Length: 316
Figure: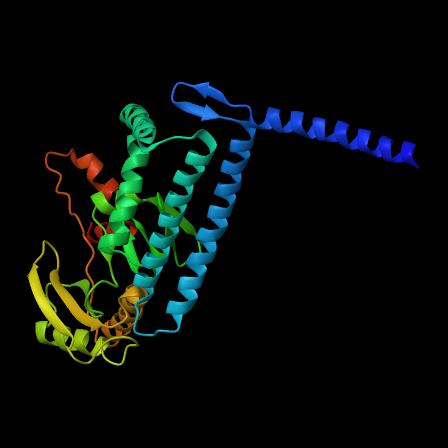
């Protein structure tokens, strides 16, 4: 019995020695300048990062659920607050992870950011510009989640505003990834910003011998009873100019669904085409006439059509 007890004590002593040696290896510190690191500190730092990411996602989702029940809070503002909370939690967690993993103080962090700024100056300025523009979009909120925007030839609804890019979904359900700096520095049409109403302009040209009053009344009638077109303010027509081969008008209508402006234009154009055919209002097309001088007479008949040639033969 005593032998077995002594053997157990010996095994425990050996195992404790192995554990002590393993622990010493894990906690052995390596110093690189102002940075001190060990295997255990790296493990703690990675664990802090993982916990931070989970906490950031959980806190953002929690705030979003709490604010979703309050109808008076704008969805765009709710999205901005959730994003900022997520970024703050991640920033604090990363700083704590650096402190735990590398024993870095604020001075060392400042040195790291100085080195990063040099890298930004050499090749990462576009990424830094996108990130800064992302914060501008979140704070100033010129573009919000759900807004209908047109940038260049692309148009769609804002799906999400991320740290570096913004996702815009078109009517074809195609996701367009737009750098945030492009939304800040370039011209962007926001159909949902400010006043929910928007005026839609539809240009139209008619033949120069058309009755101006008839054209005006027809265009006004074409805008009536069209879906999503407001009766107040009333539709109006402007006579823009005398064109080279047409009289140029512009039909102006108002809508409280500016994101549907493409479909509204289509509906009105259908009505215009139908009414113009009923009232014999012609839409002109450019024509050109050529006058040839000094042509030999033996080549003149080749320019005539069959009817003209037969008529010339009869006269002859």
